[in-house]
Image 1: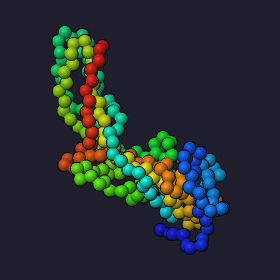
Image 2 (image 1 turned 120 degrees about the horizontal axis):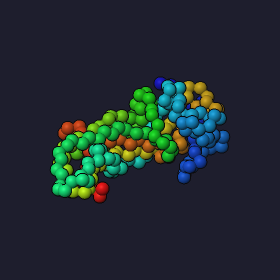
Image 3 (image 1 turned 120 degrees about the vertical axis):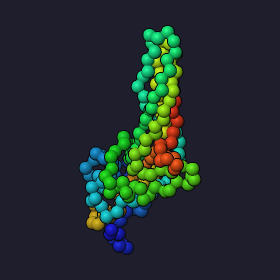
Image 4 (image 1 turned 90 degrees about the vertical axis):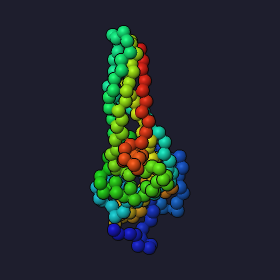
Length: 219
């Protein structure tokens, strides 16, 4: 892995128009809008990192927290619309979640194994002793539930996973000048335009951590 020698080239900042904070640099530093599919006049550092076209792609974490994610329906709708008594049903419900990556508020994009490893290196280890998470791992939550659907109603199960959120920026090094610079920062040094969302799982059995919810409504 090559590193920039002292006095070799200048720094460049990738600062999308959506960025709320721009870090000032010395005269001659370049700025550009770039992300997957954005523009042709400056390097697309995301694509380059994804395809091994750089000497270094390093993720720097700025913020991290864990919170419940969005609820998703994890069972079929169970109908008791024509019944004249409560219906009791026992079934197993499953939800599977994996790591998602996004760049400067764009929709989530897929990253290659090599690039994913670089993101993993920059995501700090969890400080919690009761839970853990692994970037890139697919996790599943499975529970058996007994559901009661009153007559004239229908119901379904939802699940909300706990998600470890990490925000930061990319430091990208090229072995030769790319649009006049060896170093590029996306979306700006100290920014939070890169996001890595990873499901939390229980240490005891490796299952996805979260909450199941049951709901019924009129037919």
